[in-house]
Image 1 (cartoon, rainbow over the protein chains, first blue to last red):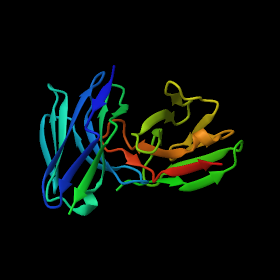
Image 2 (cartoon, rainbow over the protein chains, first blue to last red):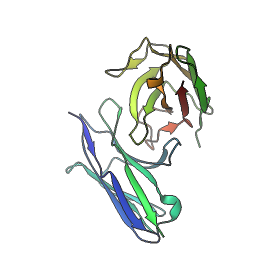
Image 3 (cartoon, rainbow over the protein chains, first blue to last red):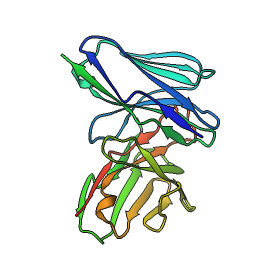
Length: 109
Length: 118
């Protein structure tokens, strides 16, 4: 079956670095997405990886290893506004997204 | 950037009534739109894939007669919740692809519609 696993909740300190891991199993693979979602709002796109390696975009970076079915989202210089849920999603061979349950990130001062 | 507009943002209705939610791609054409629902503290769940000019493809467990989807044009898809009941109360979100598996892979999401059925 198709499955996405990511931690339910993580806590980090303002100004620090946090890494949110995601493992996936899909029928075919057309990329791995990370989205940020604040409570009551629609998700906003953070990153898309389809090739192995690290993609850096400002304070956020995303890594993909296709052979391991593994990705992580790295957030640097954490700010209070980064408190949100982070959703990992893999796109299968039919271009449909398989969503993880989301990781709730709590930032403490 | 590409924008997807969803309307209404909030809707409260009485049990047994029908509610229509619109999803529009404002500056691109979308042959495919997706409808999701999200319960509190849970992830997005795909309900159906809406294809312009053809019938929607529903996910297992989603009642197609209850959740009517119409994708009449390349910029508009509608979701109608028929005979709504309190258990249908949820956050409904649409998304659209400008291209199938497009260059950036980005899905563009509507703002979401929060439905409360009394």
